[in-house]
Image 1 (spheres, rainbow, N blue to C red):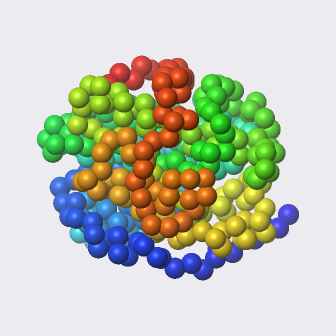
Image 2 (cartoon, rainbow, N blue to C red):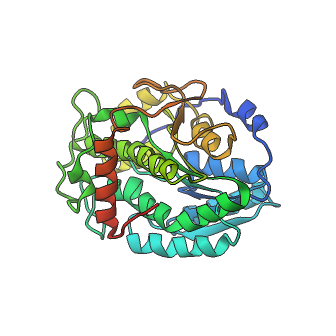
Image 3 (cartoon, rainbow, N blue to C red):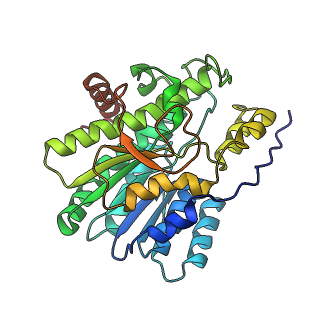
Length: 338
């Protein structure tokens, strides 16, 4: 099998001007998952360059160490902290959350649940859940729950704090959130069919369920925070079609073909332009809770200037929000009470 894939040579269109518009983030503490490459690395680099204390949550690896060293070299004055966090293990997430709390005596101003995997094989984590759902949503749900006291402390001290989730245009790949994908059924969720377009097969159905879960989590969390008169905001972004290492990882796992990927990504945008959504959600003081940010609101919003828009009815409804919350609490074995 030919696994060679050459990323297209794209140029930033919007990021450089956007970077100049970001205000100082001095005295703010921001935690970001998945910062070894792609949009997470860009987000970490951006907020560090604006003065934020940045907590980098990554699985232990040489890539994690290298990216930390690169960020430190690029931002020698910044306070950067590398915390081991394997999103395929609830135990690791719980340990990581304790470390983050220790690093945030004045509270956590923003948690960016960025890390993700795409169209991987139908396998279970050590906790028994689909590897995509646990990585992309369930572990972030648990992490958010464990860090809520730190987020509340920052909101009390500074007037607000934020939880930012990272969805995708792939949320449109399924019509509704299904309970089975949030249950301990990893390895038994449809197999390894990899067709993406026109009646997507199992790998992509599972991925779409995770990206829909990211959006539904935001809708449910925002509702609960608003009902409790909290100063914590919940927002969600999508990166459009951004050229990152995610495509290469999926190719290696057998979820995408090299030729199709090469052709498709020519119509994409840089990781810098793709990261604007999550960065804006973390830093733009004008955004309200329960807002979606990305390069357009529709199924074909692959690139372009970032806009903000309302959450969409196919997940921002009471049935889906309640399903997401109930099944996620069952999965992590804990109640999440705002």
